Image (cartoon, rainbow, N blue to C red):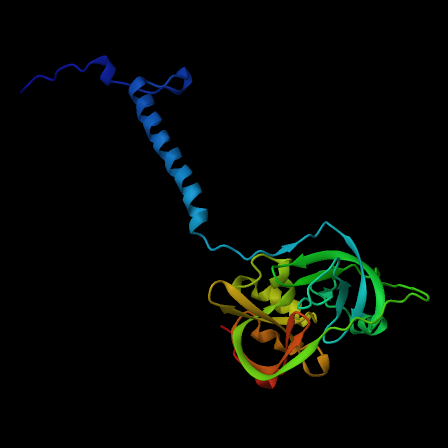
Length: 266
């Protein structure tokens, strides 16, 4: 039998915790592995966000209350018409249209809309907006009628044109979530929240995605401009909706009812 040759002491490294000293070969091994791990983690941190889906640009300035003045209208849905500052071209409406809601998942109550309809008012709230639409989350009891005495501005005229009956296909969403209450404001993960918004009276919205990252957004109203809360089971799904398309200023409105909706839960 071949005798066992004694091993060199440097081949018999053994780490002892209380010595607080790592043997040279183990130290070199750990050093190389840690460099590799940190390099891999750095590359993942750089590359992973670039591969993810980019959310739409929508915001809600929850902690930034603003004071606004404008003309309150309840038709086709509660909105504040705010005069645009400065000179504008003929193709751009003279007034911006801001949809209105109450905090959380509540719409402007019908009795409040009736009280202030067709009057100049001041109010306080926070802004939600994306690249095309804006909504004001109004602080309850902050709406006041403005008394201009003899200098009351003329009633704003918002051009309104019917484009007839059309059948449209797109994703049915809650307008408030889509405009910035959450980001992203679409997808199945937000369906439960969106349903609560619609059952709370906030108008739903039909979003049609077009090529080159463009969209058409239709705010939905029922007949006689009544909110269609019963549409809630379809929220978060792709639907076909038939109704009257109306151009209201620079907004698109779709007047429909449940008998004109073809879709369902997914």
